[in-house]
Image (cartoon, rainbow, N blue to C red; front, side, top):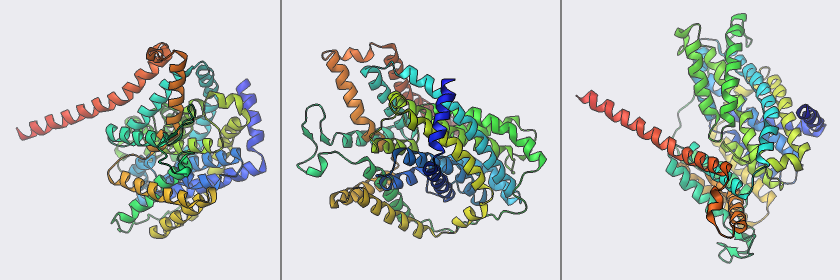
Length: 505
C-alpha cells in the first residue's frame, strides 16, 4: 500500500504543468531521435545535459526519461520503413517489419509496434514501481565493502556488455577511471594529475566528456565514413490501423515480450538487445503460422518491440535503486543526476522521494503521450528521414558546442570538448566502446572513496572486502561477468574451427 501511496504523490509532481511540458519535450525529441538512423537516445541526452544545467532537477530528469522511452518507440519506424534500425535495440524489428512494409502492410506493423510499446511500457513501469522499494530496502544494509563490490560489479558488467571485446571494454573503463583521478583528492587535499593547470583542479566535467564522446565523436566518425549510398523509404500504404486478426496475433506477443524484456533490462549485464532477440526466438517457436517468419510475421514485430520498451523500464531499476547503469543512455542519465548533486541509489529514495516517485509516475504519463504522438503523426516522423545527413550532424556539432559554452563559458572547456571529441572518434575507429569511459569517470571516484573507507575502518586489512557474504556474491558475479563471455566466445570459435576442419575433410 505504501508503494501506491508514494506513486500517487509522484503523480502530483508529474502532473504539474511544467513537468508535463518537460515530458512532452522529452517524448517528442526521443521519438524524432529514434526515427533518425544512427542517432540514439544516449547522444540526445548527452547533448541536452549542458542545456539543462540551470533547469529544475525533476523537470530535467523527467525530460531525459521521456527521451529514453521515445527513442525506444521511434526506432521501430526506421526499422520498418527503411530497414535501418534507429538504435541497436530495433535491429530485430527490421527483420519482419520491413518485410511487412514491402508487402503493403507497413501501417499494421507500425501500429503493433506502437501499441505493443505502450502495453509493455505501462506494465514494466508498474513493475519498476513495485520492485524498486524491495531492492532499496535490501541495499540499505550495505556497508563500504559491499558498496565497493557493487561498484566492481558495475565496472565489470559495463565493460563486458558493451562492445564485442571484453578486453577493449576494460581498456575503455581504465581510461575513464584514470580521468576520474584528475583533480583534488577529497581525503588528502592533494592535487592529482592536474599538471599545474588550475582548470583541472575540479576534475574533468562529466557533461563535457559525455557530449564530446557521444556527439562530437559520432559526428567525426560519420564525417570520416564514405557511406554515401541513398536509402529507400518504403511508403505507408493503406490504413495504419490493425485488423481483428492482427490484434489476435499481437496481444500475446506483447505480454510475452514484456515478461522477457523487463527482467533482462533489470539485470546488471542486461540491455534491450538481448531481450529483443530472445523474444523474436520465442515468437518464432510459438507462431501459429511459422512459415510467415522471414516474410513479414506480425508476431516478429509485436514481441521484440514490447521487449524493447519493457527493458527500458527494467534498466531504470538498477540505475535508480543501486546507481548501476546497464546501457549507454543510463550512463548519461547517471551523469544527469550528478549534474544536480544527486546520487542514484537507496539513499536517493530516502532523501528525495518526491523526485524519484515523480520520475516513475512521469514514465506512465510519457507512455500515454507516446501512443497519442506516434500513430497520428507517422507522416511527420517519416519526413524526418529525408533530412540530409550532413545538415543533421553539422547541427549536432553547433548545438553541442553552444551547450558546452553555455554551461561553462571557458576556452579551456571548449578545448577539452575538442580533445575528448577526437578521443571519441578514435575509440569508435578502433572498436572501443564509449559507455565504459563515462561510467569509469562517474563511478571511479565513488569506488575509490568506498575502498579507502573500508580499509580505514579495518585499519588497512584488505580481507575486510570479503568478510561479508553480500560482498563475496557481488565480487563473484563481477568475475562471472568477465569470464562467462570469454568462455562463450572461446567455445564459439572452437565450434567454428571444428566445423571448418570437418568441411575440409
